[in-house]
Length: 107
Image (cartoon, rainbow, N blue to C red; front, side):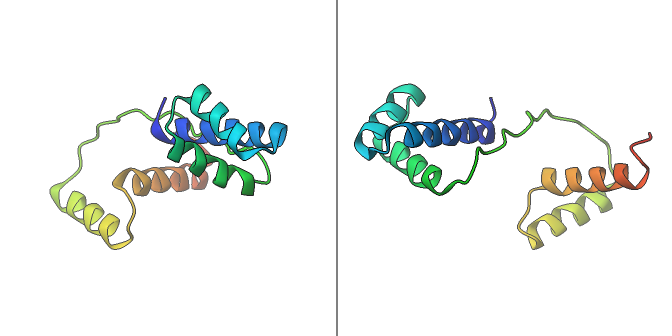
């Protein structure tokens, strides 16, 4: 499970526990035990979970996908990622999704 998926799963569990108990010390113990996290992480998760209005969506698992690009394009992508404080994966994913939407999902 990816880090993002594990975090979302923990938050959803913490939200359920909080709704069931409403007791912070008891909820912390349950989250620590069930999610195998430390006390601080359990408190953090419960603090965030208490503000949630609904479950957090579990993100899709990611895999590596290798492509060959020109050096110039790679430099541009890296520079843009750094300038916008995004990851290269995020930029590329958004670009591909936008292209697929424009083409109606056709290859």
